[in-house]
Structures are given as structure tokens and as C-alpha cells.
Amino acid sequence: MKQTFAKGFNEPIFPHFLRYTMLILIVGAFITFASVFEAYLSPVLMKWIIGSF
Image 1 (cartoon, rainbow, N blue to C red):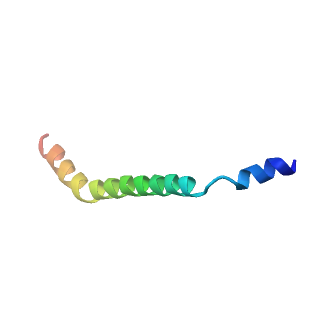
Image 2 (image 1 turned 180 degrees about the horizontal axis):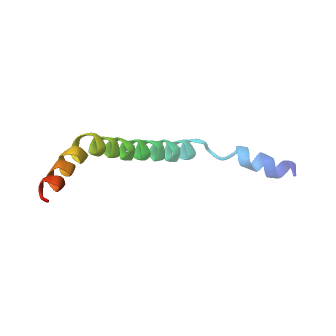
């Protein structure tokens, strides 16, 4: 049992940290893109669609 826990602590943490950081940055970029779309492009598209009827 002691060897099982000791094995887990010998893994380098940097690759896990790098993957987690990349995931957070990608999710943040996606949320930023969605927010910009909703704030600036959505009203223009709504006016364009409503005006075409």
C-alpha cells in the first residue's frame, strides 16, 4: 500500500499544470468570443433579420 502512494508523488507536476493551464485558456477564449458575439454581433444580426420580414 505504501508503494502505491509513493509512486503517485514521483510524477512530474509540470505536464499536468501545463495541460490544465491550456484548458483554462481555451475555455476563457471561447467564453470571450461568445461574449463579444452576444454583445456586438447579435444585435446587428437581429436587426438585419427583423428588417428582412
